[in-house]
Every structure is written in C-alpha cells, then in structure tokens.
Image (cartoon, rainbow, N blue to C red; front, side, top):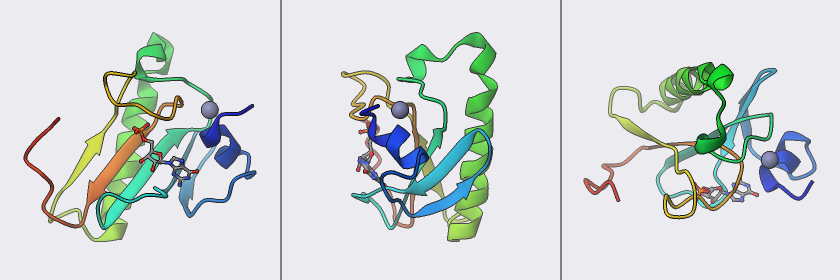
Amino acid sequence: MDCVFCQIVAGKIPSKTLYQDEEVIAFRDINPMAPTHLLIIPKRHIPSLAHLSDAETSLIGLMAKIANELAREEGISESGYRLVISSGEEGGQVVPHLHMHLLGGRRLSGKLC
Ligand code: 5GP
Ligand code: ZN
C-alpha cells in the first residue's frame, strides 16, 4: 500500500496524532497553512469524497464532529475556523485518501478558491 495516509493509519509513517477511534484518525498537517492545521481522515482507504458510498455518508458527520471537538481543544472554537474537503484533481486534492482539513488560529483568506 503506497498511500501515505494509509501508512500513517498503520503507524508506518509517524504523525502528531491528536485523536483516533475505530473509524477516524486526526493529526497535524506536516506543512501547516495556519497556526492550527489538522487533518481528519477515515482509517479505511476511500480515495476521495466522490468515492463515498451512500452507506458511508455518516462518516462526514463524524469527521465534522471530531473537527469541532479538536477546534475546542485548540482554542479556536470561538475565534473561528474552516473545514475543507478537496475532491479530485481540479478540486486541488493531492493525497488520494479522503481527508478534511481543519484550519484556524488566524484570520483566513476571504477567498474560497
Ligand atoms: P490535499 O492537498 O490533498 O487536500 O491535502 C493533503 C495534505 O496532506 C497537505 O496539506 C499536506 O501538507 C499533507 N500531508 C502530505 N503528506 C503528509 C504526511 O506525510 N504527514 C502529514 N502529517 N501530512 C501530510
Ligand atoms: Zn489510503
């Protein structure tokens, strides 16, 4: 398996893990774009949001719930933060394993894209 995030899930690539349960793991982005930049990913390899099956839609709610909890722990719940899921090449997705970015800790650009 050459997927970098699957290797993080397997512990073969170290990461600054902040949370994990049976389905999801969250860790700090290696190249942070903001003071808080976390990635929340499913442990199961799902290539992108576009590959999410109908039976898996609750996973996104779970990831958002964990992001909210982590935002509170990071002290940015009140100041504000942004959740981003990029899907596919033109969506800007680089790592082909579904992930949600949690960004905050400074005023983010008003530009969405
Ligand atoms: P994408 O552009 O696919 O939405 O985001 C992929 C993110 O994964 C990037 O922000 C990148 O910095 C992060 N990333 C890539 N490889 C690693 C890694 O090995 N460890 C960690 N912690 N983050 C990574
Ligand atoms: Zn993977």
